Length: 295
Length: 253
Image (cartoon, rainbow over the protein chains, first blue to last red):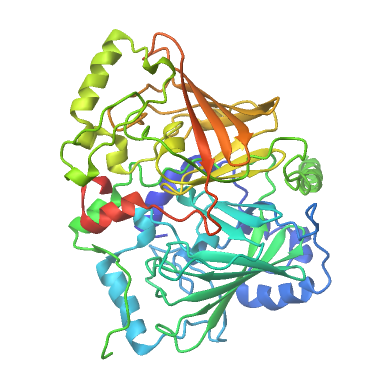
């Protein structure tokens, strides 16, 4: 876990006592049989298979009911690609299920940009900026999903951010409006919530390792309940500016079943000091990038 | 013993599955939608004349406006009156808004940005454009949480009184103000909000302010909230501290 995450962890230490650690539960034999394995490469095909037969609970208006508290894949915020355990990192397997090598298919300039990001810029989450999509779904805090007939709301304990995903068919905001969290529009395909995300401002990263996308990025997320306590989360990212082809990550969201659980206020920016230290060390605020004219 | 714990856990899993699924109870008033205050309370909650705001360009001068405080009187204790005057003198930098901090309640309501109310049977959620602030108002009869001490946005517990949503808000810190001219409170602040739908596109909003460390008696603000009826109205982002970081100004601290 990096120093930045430690700073974050200190601000959320208050909550640790209340959160169910989904990873720890994986050791329970009963659970291991009931659900798909945690490792994305194994989880993904297993969950897709389970989705074919699982009948999810429904909301009063008949849509799959995702409501409750959930947790993503916390180690991924270090690096969504496979990375070893080090003094800085807890280590983890890649979230990327396509391409099969588990690596982001960067164009050459963008691969260099990842190195530049790490070398020169403050990791945007350290400054409490919104985590963006999809990173919001695996930052190491709790997620609450709420639904009504016209929208799905996702609330993140991380810096009290949220997403509003209209599901009643309205058009995307004008392309001149760009957003940290992007502009989300949802629709139902059978038991799956499909979310189209555009209008990126291109300033959020995918992880602490500097993995990124640009404001040209277009995400399509797919959320499907595969058992009562597991959502198969999948997102395909298409960004012709940065990548050679669209690629896909997948991982489980596990239900937090702690009775009486509630999100608390993580006032991240208020009292945040690590960014000032990083700026004094010469790191800069990441402004987003565009493809160089002559890469 | 372990088996008993495991059994209890299993029961709770079953119980937890359906708890959150209910949408707004149809018999309760519908407050849902995108709303915004339409006044100058963000500048000054009392009656005020238009004037330059020291340190800001002329085009960002403070507009004059009628106040939102009942009787236009804020019943400060004597020592608090002096503190307010000091806040006023230092308002350009001492206002927590200048640091892009969460503005607290009720100030978040009349910041010049829209917010969206979403209702569920056990919870009302308010999602604010300003600083992506959120509030979860518990409607399940539960008492205030002991975990929310010293928070910026408070701990909100709501109930229906006839057609009015009444929200009791406690557990504040002492670091937010009511406006840009230094009206303030202590961590003993207790706010009771009342949201009453008075038309298709209008909510009457009231906030009763109580703080035995700062005021001699409770006092009240009152203002209409208007629906954003534009067909393309939606909550966007106002990321104050990100804007401040981009230029390295004071709000980045």
